[in-house]
Image 1 (cartoon, rainbow, N blue to C red):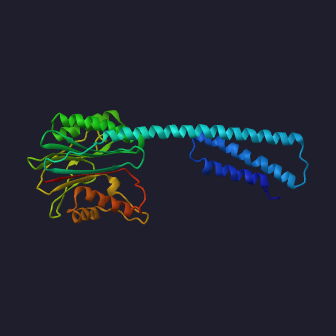
Image 2 (tube, one colour; image 1 turned 135 degrees about the vertical axis):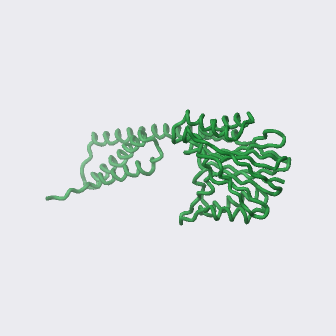
Image 3 (cartoon, helix red, strand yellow; image 1 turned 180 degrees about the horizontal axis):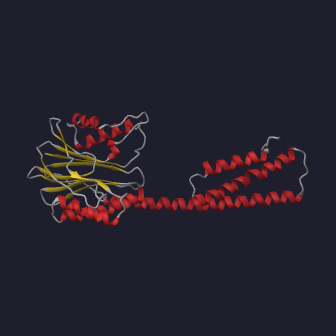
Length: 332
C-alpha cells in the first residue's frame, strides 16, 4: 500500500494556517481569526504553487496567472480589512477599559485623613485594567473612622461592578450608625438577593475610635488582619462569619479590641498572602506574621513598601498575578 505524502505546497499552507491561528492572530476574536487564517493560507499556497510550477519547468498560462493575481488580491484585501476592523475593536476595548479603570480609581480614597492621633497608609494595584479589590477610610465623626478592605470574587469588569455596588451599600449602612453585625447582615442580604452564589466578597470592616482607643470589627471570610503592638505581639482579627453574598442565611459576630499607643492595624487582600514563586515558595502565614513583627518600627508607608518588595521577590520580580491591596492604621 502506497504511503500518502503531502506536497510542498500543502505543507506550506498548513504551516501558514497554524501560524495564523495559534500565533500571529491568536489575540483576535474567533470569527475574525478564522477569516484571517483562510487569507493566510491563500497568501502562501497560491505563490507556493506558482513557484513550484516554474521550478518544475511547467508552462504558466495567462489564465492561471490572472487567477493567481485575483486570488492573491482578494486575500490581501480580506487580510487588510479584517485586520483593520480587529485593531479598531481592540483599541475601542482598550479605551473602554481605560475609562473603567479611571472610574474605579475615583471609588478609592483620593487621600487619607491626617492628624487626630492616627496615621494611615495604603496601597492598591489591580492585576488587570479593573479589578475587585477595594479599601476605604471613612470618617464617621471627629473621633471615629470606618476602615474597610474588600476582595470581590472573580476578576475584571464583573468583579469591579460588584465592588462598586458593595461600596455604595457599605458607605450607606455605615453612615446610618448601626451596629457592625447589622451592617454585615444587610450587606449579605442585599448581595445574596441580587447576585449568583459565585459572586461574593470577603471583607474586613472595623470602626476605630481614637478617643476610646478601641476597634470594633467583623471579618467576613477575609484573610486575617492583625494588630501589631510596639513589642511585636500580634493579635489576629478573625471574628465575623462567611463572605457576604455567599449564603443568604449567614450570621455574623463582631468583636472589640483595645488599642494602645503605637499599635497598628494591618489589613490586606490575598494578592499579598497567596503570592507564590515559580519554585513554589510562598508568603506563608507564619512568615508574614514574623515579617510584620520584624518591621514594626518602620513607618506605615515604609512597612507597605517592605511587604511589596518581599511579594515581588517571591514572585521573581514579575507582575502581580492578583489584585494587591493593603491598609495600615497606626494609633499615636
